[in-house]
Length: 440
Image 1: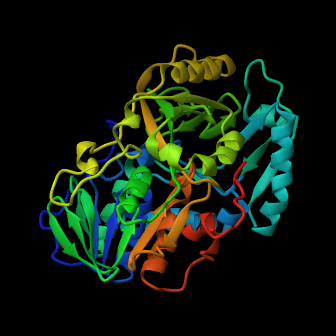
Image 2: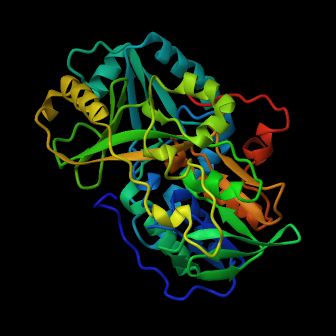
């Protein structure tokens, strides 16, 4: 777990009942709890480990509308509004900065895709600007590279992954929500096909509405009740430097990305490089996922490791009175890939000599939970009345997380949805709809 992760207090008493129980304390669960509590509902947020402990604190921190799939663009607008308003509503900094993002490339196909995306940008009033080769070199002056061009997404920005979800969860508490960490949800109490409560390791919470925002664990939890959620996780690696020379706030190149943190350090990563572990769940949903993995990942390694037998994608059965898989692994904390760390450092230091000899403060692995079309699921379950699902950020869930949480809150509360929820329905994978792989 990141040493920078902001740790928040848990409420001591488990409530006997709540209007809504949110399972999972990542950026989506924390945001949903906030928006539900803000409208006056009683909310209990339960987290098997620590709020923000998994993927929500391990990502780049980019909060963007740029290069979003068309289905996500309305929701990304809601997200950017939420990021902008959290600090004032909570009276605490969530780390969001509207700094703009800079992309540069020497790949003509990539540049053509960015230019083509401009048509969508205009339809959705996204403030973005193509950069000429000279402008790209001025903004991203990399040694030994001849950029063909780039993009400046003017109104986009970055958040601080180590503090965002915990701070938003604390904000939900200001509106009356309760937060329960080291408190795994083992299962649901279902009466006549409808939810009557959530069974946690610390007792039962009576409720008729449950939001499963369990990230990489969401499909495993649903499977107990015959709810199929095609989900697969890829393992990625990132590193954090010590505070260093300021090269810019948020930069993308084909070989590396750099995101400056509030303390002057950088999060460094490579887009598209990941390991796909062979797991029972992965095999179950393999045919759904092949098109997405082939399109989105440049450098996929296939691996077999502990996740074959342990964790969210392994075979597992348990009863609600005994230890569950969610308690056996409080925080999903895979080892970082040494090969990827070497590739990141090579890509960064070759292009940016000012960072040669840079000190590494930390490195980590993370499981990024994906859907077959790389678009999240935000949906009621057709099988269990009162069960809702919000997961599948597919590697870009942090920036859009507040929007996912807001739409999930609208659905759970039966309020008017902030955007059309149809593209995010779970049933799209089973009703004969064509699965279109999203994103660039």
